[in-house]
Image 1 (cartoon, rainbow, N blue to C red):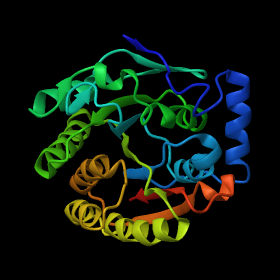
Image 2: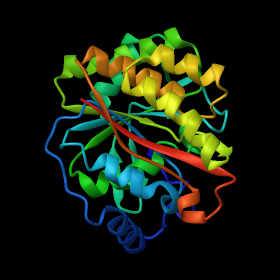
Image 3: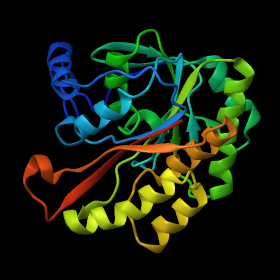
Length: 268
C-alpha cells in the first residue's frame, strides 16, 4: 500500500523544489549532531509556524535506521491504536518504506495495536514529520502509529512494544512523539501551561504529564503519543531530556492573542 500525502500543499509546499527550498530556509545555520537520541517530541503544524522548531529538534538526532512515529488522531477515523506494517508513505521528496519487521513485531506483541490504514488516511500528524526526516536522513524506514486512546496503561503497553521490537530486531531507532502544545490561547497563557507539561516531559514522567494536561486543561494534542514515547525510551535506557526550542505561532503571524505553542524536546 502506498499512503499518498494529504498535507502536501497545505502544511508544507507541494512540489519537490519548493519543499526543498522551504526546508533549507528552516535548517539554515543549524549544526548536525552525532549524539544518540532515543526519542523526541516534535511539532506538526504548518512549516511557516513550527518548521524552525522541528528543524532544530531533528538536527539533534544522529542517523538511525528506523523512526517509530507516534501521532495523535485528529480525524476520529480508524481504531484507537492504528499501526501500518506494510507499504510506504509518499511525500514530494519520494517514498519512505515502512519497517515491516519492527512494525510486525510491535503488532504481534501488543494486543492493543490494530493493523489499520483508515486512521492514517487523512491524518497529518505523522506525515508532516516526514519531509524533514527525508532531508536529514538517507535510507531510513518508518513505523507509523496513530493514537486516539487516552488510556495510560494502553499507551504504556504500546510504548513497551516498540522498545521490545527494537531490542528484538536490533535496529537502530528513534521514537518520535508528534505533538503541538497549547492551542488557541494567548501567548502568555500558552507558555504558562506549556511549561507545566514540558516539565513533566523533561522529567520523563508520562503519567504525570497526562495528569498535568488534564488538571490544567492543556490542549496538547499529542500528549498520548508522548506518553507512549516516554514508556518506550525508558525501556531503552533513557536518563535525561533536553528542551531544544519553545516557540509559538504568533512569532510568525504577529497574533499573540490566539497562538499555538510548539516544543522540541530530545531524550537521550
